[in-house]
Image 1 (tube, one colour):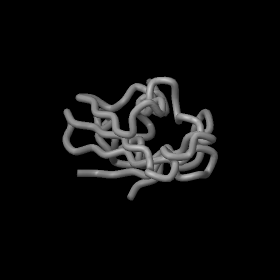
Image 2: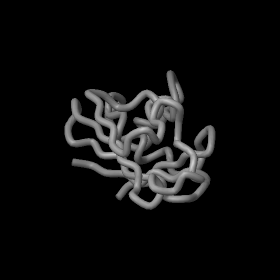
Image 3: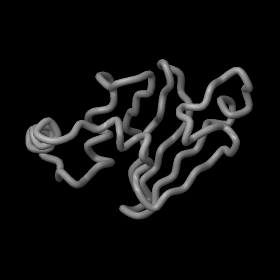
Amino acid sequence: MRKAAVYLRGEYAGELTEVSRTDYRFRYDDDYFANPGKPAISLTLDKSQQEYRSNYLFPFFFNLLSEGSNRMVQSRTLQIDENDHFGILLATAQTDVPGAVTVKPL
């Protein structure tokens, strides 16, 4: 099992967990979820529920990954299997990502 902290504009918003390659979970932090002034991290992971489950890496997080030759270079440089989406996310989504969400390994 691998886990990551998810931040929105530098503020802790929740936890992303890979239980297995077919079981992913995102859970909003209790305080973040309870605060109506805090926005959802994405339209597909809105604050209508506190925990989400999926059989694959949520598309929102998958879209933070690079594609094509950039992805190939990253996986080779970091020595991570090109198909290990969660591993690449943990290694690359800490700082230089599009948008306001960052992901840091726990």
